[in-house]
Length: 208
Length: 208
Image (cartoon, rainbow over all chains, first blue to last red):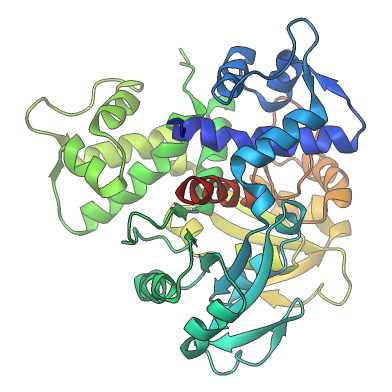
């Protein structure tokens, strides 16, 4: 049975996961919701509520087993699937994503790169060959790509999304600042780097 | 009096801001929470609740004045400050950030770049000269840098944060996957690209 979980909770799970992974690397075995809350600036009540959504975690008065909780969250997030990514658009951002080591530590791997620019096609980024967009359908099938990453300008993004869907990707991660139309069966996450920066601006304004 | 506003609300404000700015450029004068909700894929109730946090906006049965609402959100987010950024670490990610055009559209500008790599120092990225880290204090003062952006590997990030704080930045935007210690008077926002990707993984796991 699938429960309905709020988007806000889902957005917090990777934060928990990342913090727990860090704690595990520091050989911390047990963590209370109070400590986790202090680290993440989230109330302990919120943390207990979030985790309770997925069943019984932790023991009252003792805390959570760091390794166990990390593994459970990994399973909830589907990180055990070791999703395979293709990045479309190998400009500055696409190149940075192709080199972003954090993905690998969560089990994601970049397996294909595409660009429309002939001067880039055929070159390698982080050991991965850049292909032309015309070969997308064939390569996405042969490399078993799960996730299409859109790192092209806004006016090219919908076209790329259509190509990725037609090529059979199971999800889309969009960095172009535009609302994309994709079938409702294809999960879509929009990433906007200026959101974090705006939040920082907000907090800086509160300080002055 | 400063109200406590949830992080989730703060994170939605830049989305509202960007949409309203687009609407203003299309000469739309009035927008209802229904229309804004449809555009952003957020419920009208959520939008009304978010905006009510900051006081009385809009008129029942008529809608929100696009220009007025945009200006109010800009003020809430502190975007009128036109913050000046310095990026430390001009690798793939730092280079992508230096070229990210979305920042300028929100009033942020990148005014300085730093790297420890001698082969990069002296070169230009997007018209901005890359300086050596040793010149940081002087250049951050002379260029009136407000925000330090950390785009170096995790094991160098705390050292860079210390240098940025000593140089007098007012806020830090951290891309290194590590928890930094900075004075509580210096707002810190951690950016982790794998959070959005993890949320996508969750949704894809629910589909299968």
